[in-house]
Amino acid sequence: MSGRSPGTSPRTGFFALLYGLLFAGAGFAGYSLGVLLKFCSLFVRPNGLLKGAAEYLVWYSGIPLVIGIGLISLDLLILLPRKRTRLDVTFNAPPNTDITVVLTAYNDEASIGLAVQDFRPHPKVKRVVVVDNNSKDRTREVAGAAGAIVVLETQRGYGHCVWRALQEGSRYQDTELTLLCEGDMTFRAYDIEKFLSYIPHADLVNGTRIVEQLRAHHTQLTTFMYYGNFFAGKLLEAKHIGRGTFTDVGTTYKLCRNQALDRLLALVNPDINLEFNAHFLDTALANGFSIVECPITFHDRVGVSKGGNASNARALKVGLRMISGIVLNRWK
Image (tube, rainbow, N blue to C red):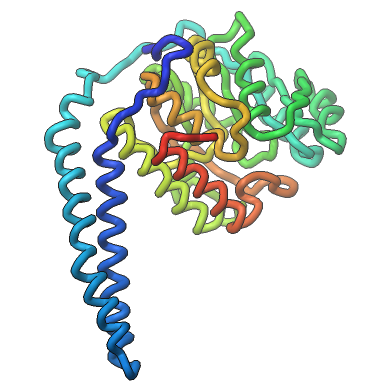
């Protein structure tokens, strides 16, 4: 169930379904704009310019639309059967299901103690490690007082903090699994059993917040972010068609086999900041690691959001960088 060796270049090629969807979307957008301009021309005099632009858009939007439909058909009808190399459902339960929990933290004094106290009593948790990314408040002191092992990551940035957390978790010899989470109380320890039920089927289990019944009404994940994450997840799925079903590329909460992390951490770039989770998933899929999504609960955070969910405007910037990385295969 392992991926390729460290240093292997990510799988590149022509992702027909992904590009087909983009072409078809551009064609549909052009056609819709042409129809709108045609409608507006009914109320504008003189309307020659609007009518000309409308006719141009309606006529030529058919070109990318036809190209898109062709590429989609090529991938789904011809290429997909060759991409599906797995013949049966994989079940490879780890012999040791004890977990090292690693929590990322930055100025989370108000929540980190609660998060540590939530995870530590769980019967499958051997230890809780808090990786502090240069907090200016008392995050480290509160985490230590709550019983966590505290590690300071001096390089600023979400990517560096997550990378260090996964590295710290995977170095322990008495656990084979590392559970990555945030220290803001948006995720809870009672979802551990869900992750453990999925890990026999994959190298990595990625939590998805895109389940309406499992998320609190008041969270920092707005409607725009909710469906934006779903859209980016489907682009990732289209890119790696046949490799999995994906609905959430931005969640931190995930369970990883340490033997997979030993290879995968050499392939990802910790310099990538708030879009690191999408980069992590894309790199894992491109290098042959298996990923399964797990529905998780999502709660209102304790404290103030400092990441991509701080506002819709910031989420849009992060989302566009995620989409750019997925589509163009360039993350930095």
